[in-house]
Image (cartoon, helix red, strand yellow):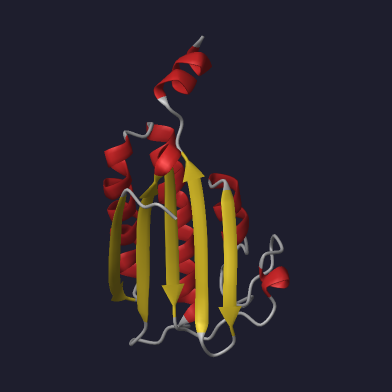
Length: 152
């Protein structure tokens, strides 16, 4: 995979770091001059992935680490990888089912993966129980010609 630029950052799995993660990804992606809507899509998808790692991956443990990797790829593709070493997901298919939540007692909608899928072009989830989860998302940004054509 040809990478034009890359950023990798690790931080504690705390809910207050979710806003840092989404801002960091969007600031880095800004090099490609995305639209406001494209930035909002990335922001939302990253927010959901990091929140899932904090809430479900580490389930309130104080010592968890989340690693976010952002790559700018040819053809204006933004690649985002969010990894944790939390409890993992036993059944990925079930976890990706809309309205399913591994924390039903909490006020969770169970739409995290659905939201991530709707705001990115591709979503991949790999997980091992006891070893953590890796979420990979890709979003291709429109080029100037596509943006102009959309306004006609």
